[in-house]
Length: 70
Image (tube, rainbow, N blue to C red; front, side, top):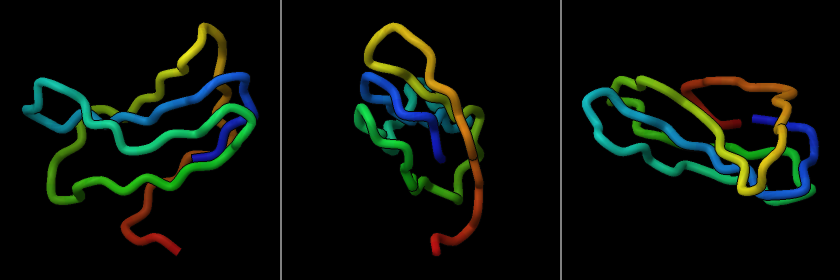
C-alpha cells in the first residue's frame, strides 16, 4: 500500500472471517509512504482497513493485493 505522507502513523489491520478482533499487519510512520503487509492467505478476509494515530485524512495512492511479494 502507498499513501500520501501524513503527520502521524497509519496502521493497517485485517479482520478475518469469524474473528472477533482485527489483526495488526503493518504500519506507515509519519512522513513515510509505503508498507508491505503479509497476512494469513488460508483464511477468508472480511475487511482490510487503516487507522491514523491522529485525527485527519490519509489518502491511499496505491493498494495492491497479490499472492507473492517481489
